[in-house]
Length: 342
Image (cartoon, rainbow, N blue to C red; front, side):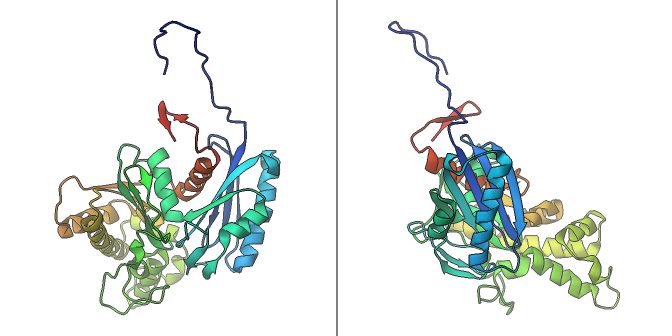
């Protein structure tokens, strides 16, 4: 923005140098490690992925280091140009030590992720939960740019949530706020990966839904052979064709998600919910049930809005970049889309 000249020496318009340094974002997924390199303003330069389904914690850290070197080469960058790195995991992270307290889907418990990645990459590393980072990305780049407080919900291989309050990501004193997936939503003894029973994640994760459909299809009169349900893409294809069994399973999942969200809304008084992850792609059969059952169980129903993430599965990795950007340039006012942000 230019201000009217009021005498004295004319001002000089400065522009942030996007080539002054580079950033990295790393996402530890259930099936692999994804890494992206960006310029100083967070614009992607190169992204790579390596599958790591059966690797131990130590092997995944070594894989991340090799992926870092490979992506640097692709982007034509030197390691010395990387100012900061954001790393995200599907589990609670101690905000002080950078230790991943628990990531049951990865088989991790109390691993010193920040220390190990800092040693592997040779650059400062910020570590956070994937859902908190995703919420940060949605606030700055996605469908939640117009709201100050909201809950970002991850519906995929796991279930979790990230909380934004007054345009600030809430990390919590112990690093695991908004563990929505571990709310108890049924008295049925359905085992959860955390060791509990009846948790939302055990009932509506993508693998849980696939297993449910495979079980129903193995019964006499099943609509399709179980081998046709290899991936969640197969489930979505069946849903698009109007399969009544698949539709019923998705609607049941939506009702359970809505019940859990009602508890979160009653507790936090956030009225905007953003749904991300593969399950959110199920569209109307899911979203209608989420909204209906959520409103059925909240104390006040006005202004509640359910939105679908616009970041197409990229929210986590983009959030990792945002963490790195904040760590690298904490005192700069960055101009994005005409608005100054810290």
